[in-house]
Length: 127
View 1 (cartoon, rainbow, N blue to C red):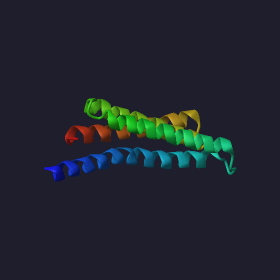
View 2 (view 1 turned 120 degrees about the vertical axis):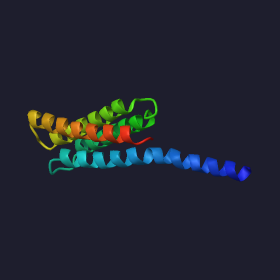
View 3 (view 1 turned 180 degrees about the vertical axis):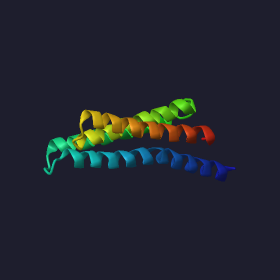
View 4 (view 1 turned 90 degrees about the horizontal axis):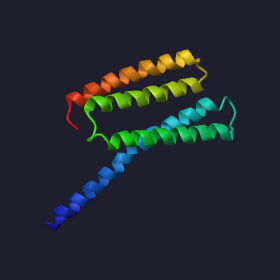
């Protein structure tokens, strides 16, 4: 009986750390790309701050969406992922020098595509 309890605790700890792995990885990649776009061929502290803050915000938002998955309807959860993806891509597109209209259109297209895919995935497969 003790062996099963120890195995369950170890298994629980593995899932807790895995809950942070994906948001942190995506946040780091997002932050590095934001830094790359913001630096304009120069290594400045401002570009580094943009990258760190962007990555941290993205990681925290993804972690928040991940932790509330059981309390939110699948359709709303899909829309939230779509909104986060659209806002994130739109922001990166604006850092790259896109106009306001182009940035808005790109964010809207990506957000809609991600929302449709996420809603389909969340409604056809159980958690």
